[in-house]
Image 1: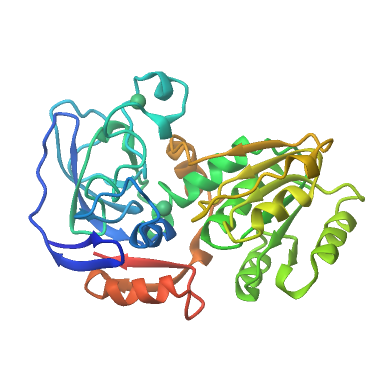
Image 2: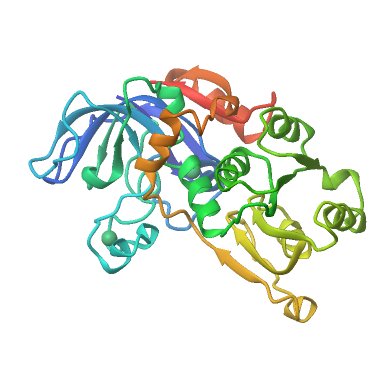
Length: 349
Ligand SMILES: [Zn+2]
Ligand SMILES: [Zn+2]
């Protein structure tokens, strides 16, 4: 079968690999129908994900059809259309029992697919703990509509949840890339007073505004830092944002995040940085901020799929490009260089 393999730092190849088989009774074999490229794949390519194992098939965001199930699998059967969760988890360890599945203590727990074990930029994939990692797609939901359930939407849903948004809050989201847009989409579920999108890319801000994901857009590259802080104050009765989501992971975006937050705000850091960040405690003393950081706990896929089915989560504006697995390496180039207004690819397998 065809598959995208992470050979070594800086090198991804589309190559032939044997079709995987079930290894454990809890495994499910999925025939991939639609896959995509995530910025985490680019981080792996750059060598910025230390636990990524060379030789692994990439891909952790995809949908498909169940081909075969292990004896212990109860939730899905061959022929079911499913969305695949970015995280595999045992469901019974200390962390899983508390919903912190990102830190599942099983050797295969957390983000393993397309990082430490073979993922879904391929024709077939073996999913460990299939009962936990697969969500059935209702008949009226298309593959495209369900594509981002397990990663992007899971991340947006989880971050909006831990961000503690209350009705009427002023929410600032730094970064209007795919994850930022999904964070805005999920923040909307909590009925904030306004959502302010910040990004240096005018096209992405336009997408946020045109799809009613953000109410106000600010391009920090077009104004000074002082002007940016003033604009946020103006939009928040002089206080600063009640809730800040840092989804950009840029050079200065962490600093922007705490500066535009009002005192006692919750600042949720979703971004994955390629370098260390500075926490200037003397400057933020007295602001009494609450920081939340992390990687998605992807255990809300059932709720997400229900919201997709009802039309409350609609990621169709994010799919700007479509291609097939044979052409995925061209897609990688465009996606990595952010050319051609690309937000996300839908890649037919
Ligand atoms: Zn991802
Ligand atoms: Zn676990």
